[in-house]
Length: 294
Ligand SMILES: CSC[C@H]1O[C@H](OP(=O)(O)O)[C@H](O)[C@@H]1O
Ligand SMILES: Nc1ncnc2[nH]cnc12
Image 1 (tube, rainbow, N blue to C red):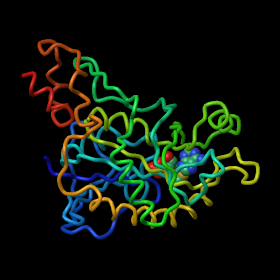
Image 2: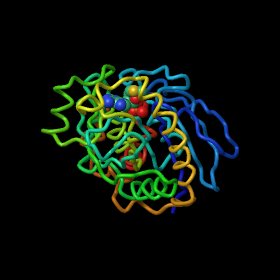
Image 3: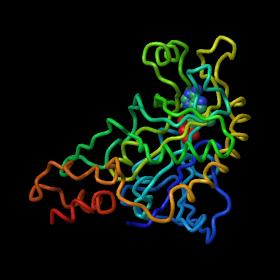
């Protein structure tokens, strides 16, 4: 048994959460650079919580300028065991309507201008992301969202695009009709991959704000419409988040899906050949396995 620490990464429209006891904005020193903002830590129903606004307070980071490695590393340094990512998304499905939440379970990663791994030359590591989200956290997110009265869809494929421009009509149709994607956003990759490398369970909750540009009755996606939907969504998201601690509890067993042991056989570089500088930067993310190797 270890202590649970729930990390919330808040996307567009979700820049703070309410009701934390002992709430403090903490700055975390990370060897991977600056996180998007300080992290709000505290307790909710006796469970440790850590909230990070993905774009920073005041929405200063774009999807491509976010330092995803620093964000995940900082959460790991604070002891976060379970991350719920909450994101504004476009929908490719009529029935996944603006205002609904989708518990995402798969991704197609079309991003290309981001650092995507903690590993590299001098310490090569390969983790599986065949199942990039944790079903245990998916269960909690679904239960919390339904209890908050939110129309919730379980399961969906998230197309991660680079942005910042929205998709062309041809891209929107390709993702929907040919690739079978359900929602689209700009931030959950490489976030989900990095959480797996850091052995943190990860769930993604898509708050639907629009129908992207494919829907014949809705015209093209527009930030004004998105913002309007976002305000309602953010209140729902805060209600959902408030219900998570009592569902997960203050202590946890090992993840039944193995998310917290993802690095067990991942690192290929022989101990004698490892770059000491990179190994030092990996102290939080991979310290569990690197320290054991000596
Ligand atoms: C506000 S429209 C586009 C913007 O919203 C999403 O952000 P997040 O995933 O952090 O909620 C999308 O990915 C874009 O960054
Ligand atoms: N249609 C869309 N495409 C990409 N990111 C989004 N975030 C919210 N709506 C989006």
